[in-house]
Amino acid sequence: MSDIRMPGVFLNFSRFLAGIVFVYSGFVKGIDPLGSTYKFADYFVAFNIEFLEPFALALSVLLSSAEMLIGVMLLAGVSMAIATWAVLLFMGFFTILTFFIALTDPVADCGCFGDAIILTNWETFWKNVVLMGLVINLFIQRKKFKPFFAGKTIELGTVAGFLIIILAISFYSYRNLPLIDYRPFHTGADIVEKMSVPPDAPSDEYEITLYYEKEGEVKAFSVDEIPDSSWEWVSTESTLISRGYEPPITNFQIESVREEIDYTHDILENTGYTFILISYDLEKSSKKNITGINRLASWSSAQGVGFICLTASPEPQIDDFTERTGAMYEFYHTDEITLKTIIRSNPGLLLIREGTILGKWHYRNIPHADELSDNLLSWSVGLQQDSRNSLVTLGFILALMLILALLRAFRPVTGNPFARSQKVEKKH
Image (cartoon, rainbow, N blue to C red; front, top):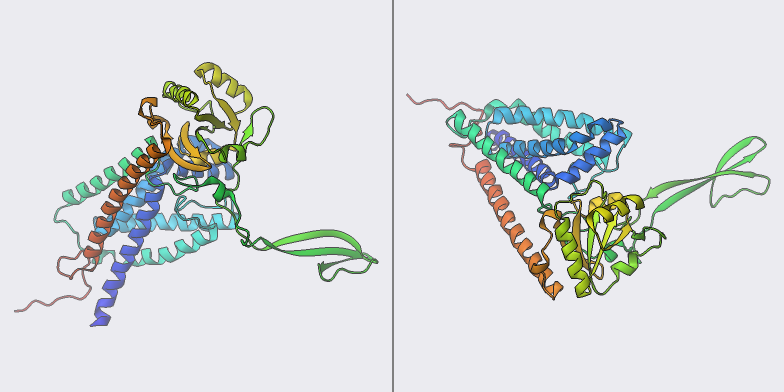
């Protein structure tokens, strides 16, 4: 009996695992469309096809939506003929692509799981190889799946419904901040702590090779085998053996615009509250809420709360921006990539105290001065609680969908979308 059931169990396992991977991969990118946009732009630059950069956002949404839709179709057993073809073509293309990327190493992280799980290019390729085996199994046995719904119209309607929900998630995350923030600059993060290296953390280990020459012969020596003075030193080579601890935040520095003085620790260790406006490029920043930003800056000044702007724009652009918008706050320089990592909004806003991020806002949602409380800590804790409640609700919905998928995958054969391969003889 176990030999008869095993093919069906493994086929459902393949369907379920592939579906989970696709849903998760698409979801973590779908809730952060700008993050995937930046990753596409990195690839375009690496492959010298910068002319495609204007399409990066559209490709980001298309990729995440396709992944989530394929994954949901696999989990729900909807339109399996289409789903198996789609997942085979998808995995075939990306397995070849990730192999090429692993060989050439144009970027350090492929971004296949967004910022949620960081994989090396080779790890990504081998992950795809394993997944490809499951997908081939699904494709070969695709005719053994029965349609879940009786009519094609209902199946297509279900797929369309899934697609609308998926696109709505990306649209909401683009116009606001990501629903879940996987980056080291999430609300509640201590920036100073995430920049620090623990005293007992392992360091990078290198193998040092020394090259010396004597009578036209060049030989390699280790640091423990340095030759006598009759040999002449030629060069030294360092090879990384094992990488040590690397803090989550490595390139965060705040410098004054004109004097290039480092104010990083002065700002992060300030015991008072500081609003930090983030704009990696002032020329590209949205001007839709400038009035609200200036009003908040004026309120902060009156309340003794700090208000500064971090940007990567050069001084002439800062002067032009100040003149056009009437900005009455200090500007500081920070690396552009770091600013894009801190917040997916241009401009965006942080509230920090002693290096801890108490709040983050998209420029569309920057708080009105009238909403603020004199006790900013209590006010920000309330905002975090509201955000936490929303995440709990989202997690409950996703868990419910997962349970339903599990019940569908492993319930009795009757009515199951998987049709067992053996034929049942009719009784006469």
